[in-house]
Structures are given as structure tokens and as C-alpha cells.
Image (cartoon, rainbow, N blue to C red; front, top):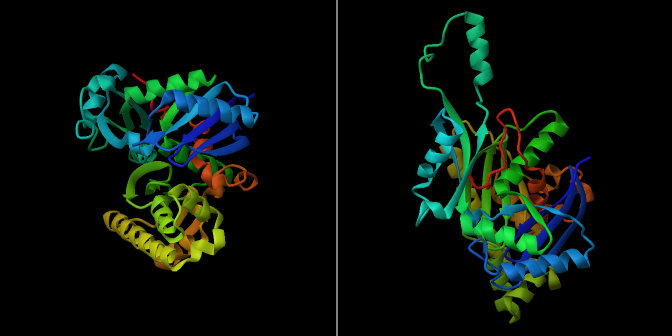
Length: 361
């Protein structure tokens, strides 16, 4: 029987918890985050974070010993890497060089991990070779392997282990939010007995919107839009003469129909234009793309006029991310818990499937 594990997604405006057992979601909880407790994707006070976790778990009667932490995209470097086949020791030595353009300071201040990706054309090459009975022209080529490589600051993981341990939790998995999406894509494909050719998952977050592109379950790229719900909060704060925290409450509850104010509608149109530009650039860079669907998650997914503006501007069909979550239609506001739920499914896999990125080598 699968063990219970608590999925944790620490955002700028909310702490989101999802208690899961296998692929069953037992309970979800979201509570406000204290101001400035998260900065540039990193927890600024492990002690305060521990207190918040303990209090939230106690008040909501959440009992768990194991934790899965979704690492913020701002604090993790993720890239696809192709390298010659090598031993694990050789890979551990060479992997840091792939992040020379990303990391600053000493290499020892970072941890690196990877997931070996199955070759997309292995089966086709073997089939062709068997049919012809002849060796491939590339038979003498140096074998290579494809990786999903990850790097993050060592201090981030040490702090996470500290505040989770003080909250009575053992860190089992720490991985980028991208891994949560990959796990959910795979879960959906197993349920439908097929997998869509392309996925675009739009995380409509507090500080930014991020378009994550996948070809089947393989990560391709992320386009970051420097707009987020905080921009809409600022608009409403000016209109109502309140602070941005209260303005955020107004926005999410549609206080006095504020989501439809002209100033907000203008912001939605600007966001939709930026999304259209990012989508057009992706399609231009990937001429064989047949992308036709976009899955929405994060707080912005609940704002109907924003969704309508995106539909009007983009030739793409929108879905709430509930569809990616097993039994997602039974989980209240499941679109907000996509990473917290998906990260509990991320675990070591054999046969070339990803291991858990984020573990120190």
C-alpha cells in the first residue's frame, strides 16, 4: 500500500499543501504566505517557514511523515542536455560544466542531478536495422544519451531539509515544478491509453506567468512573461485605495465585480498579447508544431475575463489543469494544487525514466 506523502508548493502569496496516497488526493489546503517569506524563489526564514507548516498541518489535521517539495522555477536551472554515454562517476564530474552559463560563485555551492531520457527513435532504428539485416551507417558513431539536467543552490536544499525536519517531516523528494507537470502528463496518458503530441501548461502565478512546453512527456522550453497577478493587484489597489494584499482578495473573490473593471480588462488584453507573441515565437521556432491546447493552472486560472481574453487572442483551446490531475474534478480548486499534487508522483523510475532531480550528488 502506498505511503502518504505531503506535497508542498511554496508560492509568493500562498502555501499549498496536498496530502496524497499514491494517485489519490486525500486533502488539500492553501493558506496565505507572510510577506517577504519567499524571495527569488527561496525561503528567507527557515524558522518562520517551519512554524507556518506546523501550524497549518495542526489546524487542518494533516498527519504525514514524508514530504515532496516542488522547487520554485526561479531557484532551479533546468535544461535538456545531450552527452556521450559515460559512467555515473564521469557524469557527476562533467554535469556542472553544462551549467557554466547559469551558476555564479563556486561550483561546490550547487547541487546537480539528472534524469536519463529514453531516445525517441530507439525503437524505429532497431526495427529498420532488423528489417534490412544491415548495419547502420552510424554504427561507428559515439553513442550518446539525453538528459534532463537540474541545478540549484545547496543552501536552498539544506534550508528545506531544516524547516521540514522542524515541522516533523522527512524530505523524500525535492524536484522542480516541471517534474510535477511531467508526472501528471504521464498519469493522464496512462488513463487515456495515449498521450497528446504536445502540451502547453500555463502557470498563471503571482509574480509571473510561465508557459511550459512539452512534446509528449519531454520538456522542451519555458517562456517567462514578466506579468503576474501582482500587476492586477496593483491596478485594483490604486482603484480602491487599499493595500495590495486586500486588493488580491478583491481580485480572487471578484469583489463588486472588480474583475470586469475597464482597467483590469485592459490588463487582460495586454497579457493575452504577450502570450500570443510567446506562442507565435514557439511555433516559428518549431515549424512542425501542432500545438492546439493549453492547460491553465495557478491563481489566474479562476479569473474568467482573463481566460476569455486569452481565448479571443490565441487560436488555441483552453483547459483547466483539473483535467491533468487524477480525480481532479473531485478536488476543490485543484488547478491551484497542480505542483503540490504532481510532485508527490515524482519518484525514481527505471528503464530510462526520470529519477528525482534535486538530490545532491
